[in-house]
Image 1 (tube, rainbow, N blue to C red):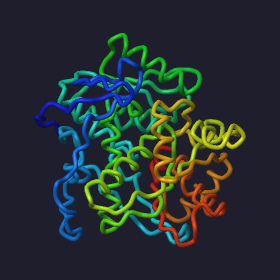
Image 2 (cartoon, rainbow, N blue to C red):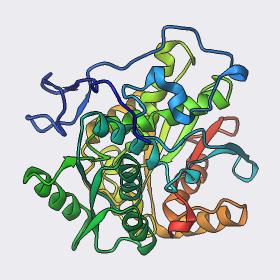
Image 3 (cartoon, helix red, strand yellow):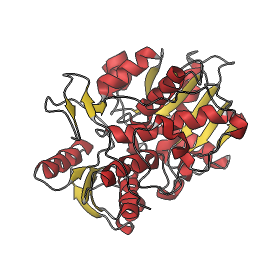
Image 4 (cartoon, one colour):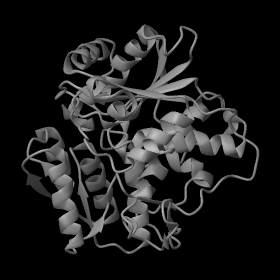
Length: 366
């Protein structure tokens, strides 16, 4: 449902300081973010009386955009997972089947407020499905660039939402390059889950929901998949905002996991050998050049976090365990539970550490 919205807030470049009413990246080439992060001016409310009927938009005090385009998304379950000694947050129950709906609702709300007619996005599947779904909700045309190797279930989800698809050959970066060329040629507004700060404002709601569901108690750590860093940076920014608002006392350690052979954050932290290998199972995080790499590394450093790379065998085994326990996820969702075991084996996480793990995408898209 689309409703009237005020003008979206301005954007600022953290590198050169330039500000814009709206632009997909700075003229200097760096990513843009909001000029200001809104924060509530009240104490944390009683969790038992917090009204969460508006889903993730219940945290509007933290979100720079207005809810112009929504499907009631958010407030995904946070459940105990005894076999993993952790809590799983079931992000795969979103309308389009992945956590990417968090960013799609805020990003398409910005697009609607700007009066955008057509959005263009590049994606390996889940982000494209989310953008297509919320564009359909907004009555905005969408064109999604995807790798030729995209899974058929994800391609079908994009097309059934009415979006046009453009398939590209070659590595994942080739899809981005083709999409950017189309945007620069005037194809439409770049609804990029990697570049657009409105998307990260949406993924930050993972932190707000988790904190509420835990009575405003932040976990010791969050273990999560890491590709472009859309969830990783969102979780970091969300918990940082909660701490700044005085609603929580701490920011959890952020422990990422990348696909072996496509692990630039791991390589930057631990060297080329630690990032080597292959992992075609985790297609959702096959990102060789994340555009916010510096911001991801800063978040790792600020939270005393880390990142590791895993091969396909570990992911396949973890996926079987998830399905056997009733968590019907896709392969990329299994990287975080697999990494949880590795982090514990390496004593990065202790036996008493309180850990939350997102399960990011539905097994119906396998």
